[in-house]
Every structure is written in C-alpha cells, then in structure tokens.
Length: 298
Length: 246
Image (cartoon, rainbow over all chains, first blue to last red; front, side):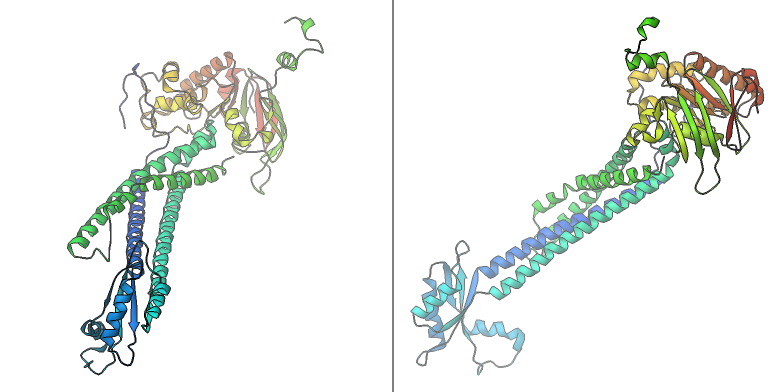
C-alpha cells in the first residue's frame, strides 16, 4: 500500500487502467513463448528440409545412367567405353564415364552380400554427369546412342525425381500446417487469457464502461496489454529457437551431418518476425474477444 | 430575448431554449428480469434541468433498477426512457458512452478502482473522455481538496476510510461537471455528521446547475433537505410533498 504523499505540481503520470495480474501474466508468457519457440523451430526446420530436398533434386536432375547392351562381337566394357565416348560429345553433358565392373559389383553388394558375382551378368553402365545450367535431355542421349549404333537404355532418374519432389512438397505442406496450427493455438491461448483477464477485471471493465469508456477504448486496453505480452514472449521464444538452431548447425557441421540437416546461418534470421507475428495474433484475438464480451454489458 | 422574437418563424433552437427538455423522462416504463414479475410498473416522471429529487422506498421496491435505467446499465422491458431528450432505445451503442459522460454516478458500494490512487480514481471520467493529465491535474487537485481529500490524493482506496471512499466516489462522479448526478445511498456508509456534509455537497452542485437524483433510506436526511421526493413501492412510483418520506 503506498503512503500518502503531499500533492505536488509536477506532471502527473496516471496509473494503468487495467490491474496487473503477475501470476497469470507469467503463465501466459511461458505458454506463448513456448508456442513461438516451437513455431520458429518448425519454420527453421522447414527451410532446412526445403534446402535438402532442393539439393537432392539438383543431384538427381544432374545425372543420368545408361545401361549398354553389347553387340555379339563386342565386350561389355568396350561397348560401355564407346557409349561413354559418344555421350561425352553430346551438348549438355559435362562428363560420361563407363562404370568399371568392380564399381558395379560394389553397388550390388549391399543387396547380394558376399555371394560370388563372377557368373552374374552385371549390367554395363555409363554414368553421365549433366551440365546443371543446360542439362541434356534423355531423348538427346538416346538419339546420340542410336546414331552411333550403340544399343542402350537411358535412365534420367525422372521416377526418383518425382518421388523426391513429392516428398519435398509434403515437407513444405507439413511445415505450413504446423505453422498454422501453432499460430491458431497461440491465438486461442490469447483469447482464453483475454476472457479470464476480463472476468478477473470485470468490475474494472464495468466501471470504465459505465463511466463513459467506448467499447473500442476498453478493447484497446486489452489489445495493447496482450500484444505487448505476446511480443515479449515471442522475443524469448524466437531467441531460444535461434540459439537451438545455431547449436544444431554447429553440431551438424562438426558431425558431418550438413547434407542431412543443411541449415544456413541466414535461416536464423527467419525467426526475427516472430515477435511481431505473435503480437499481431494476440492483438487480433484480444480485440475480438473483448468486443464480444463487452456486448454482455447493456 | 424579447417575447416578440419568439414568433412562429423563430428557429427550433430558440423554441428549445424557451422550454428546455427534461433531463430525464420516463413514460409508462416497465422492467422485469427474465420471466420474473415486473420490478417497475408503469413508472412515469420527469426531472427538469437543475432540479433536485430524492428517490425513496423500501428494499426491493425497484430503486436500483430505476437508477440502472437512468445510467444505461439496463434497458426497460416496455415504455420509453428519455435522457437529455434522446430516446435511449434509439441511441446506437457507439453513441451511448457520450450520453453516459453527461451523467455522474455514485454507486452504493463506491466501486472505486482499487489499483489506482485516489487522484487517478477521481480523474477517471476526464481520462476516459480523452483529456491529458496536464489539462486536468489542477482541476482534480482542487476538487479533491474541496471534498476534503487534498492530503489523501496519492493514497490507494484500500487505505481510505468509508467516508473518504464515499467522498472520493462523489468526486469522481462530479469531476467532469455532469448535467445529471445520480447517487445510490450515498450516505449509507457514513455517520450522520458526514451524511449532512455530503448532502451539502450535493446541494452545492445542484446550486451550480447539476440535476440531482439521490436514492436514500435516510428519512431524517430526506426530511431535513426539504427537497421533492419520488417514492417507489412495489415497482410503482408516486411523488411526495417536499421534505416528506414514504
């Protein structure tokens, strides 16, 4: 309780019209900060997943494999070498090399184990590295092989590419859904907090209402309170998410996990608008809730 | 203005000035809560500008309901309530605050904001009407001095006595010089000496032009005042002779 002070002629600073409730405000801070933290992590994760998917697509799009079938009077290795020579000259191809039998066997080992492969008809493959700026199309490669009289089938990995792109699209949709869910949850929490805040301060609100306060003035009090609270909580949540993301990036770099978790330092900037987003969601939720509740007053 | 000027060609404003609108007009007003019986039945009265009335009646007679209708905290179930010439049923919600600002309200249970100082409580209506502290702080200090709270203006309500709270509630009600002051049992929590002081305060405000309506159980005070009385009993209103009580 403040002690009476003698009146002064100094400029008066009026107290806040809404009473503070530190225990509820602290709990709300914690919940909103946690939601912001999760949303920021979801955002950063989505950026990393998108980058990883783009990398996989680029890798797949930049390569093609040709399986060569040798002629009757020709060895498989010779046919593959001839095909590689032909393909290397096609526009849009950076490099083409026949896959040695040992390398082809190594590729099959994970599936066939230690089984002797001497008698197995290992396919004769040519690995083609395409120009990323203007890659040759599968049809171009086929035409070149036909023209040179090489019997081979071209696989431009289109099937894989389709799957990878579909997976990447799902990751993006999942991240957006998570973002929307967390934003809605934050809005619902703020709406609930506004409702309980108004219930706790019902007497105050009623006195303001009956003393001539406009509905939008009272709504503005709650709107500013919760927007500020959410902005501060958002700052904490976003800051924590940035720290965790930075830690993950450092771990990924030191552990060689960057291809699996390709975080960039720039991704950490993506969390910066979050305090503003949280404040905006809170302001809208608080305003709508207050305006609706004020209609209960005559 | 001479009588000659008040011709049929005179402007509506001129006619209005000649016969001012009642501050409050109730016309066959009935009010009920939900499906319960009516608490107010065919209530009809007017309060002329600058008048002073007491509202008396036993508990449950409908005094609080009538007062609620006057400060727009409730709506009539039937009939017509006019404030300052406006039919309150026709006033859009967004305009109601401007009507409320013309009414000073002293609640029976004070309803001070416990988290604000006496000064901020008293200044509340001015603050809500958009005035800056620099514009009102001297007036509020002067008013608090007038009601005897000059040295208590920085105290919180919880630190004030019953009488001080009452005077603070009155200061809040009159700080923006309302055209109508309505008080619900303003002397209910104070001793007789303080009750007389508060009555003098209301009479002084009335002398300055404020229309005053006070709900009170205090027969002695009502009779001593010599002011007209509106008596409510079982939801029905009748006017008593000045200085008498039901």
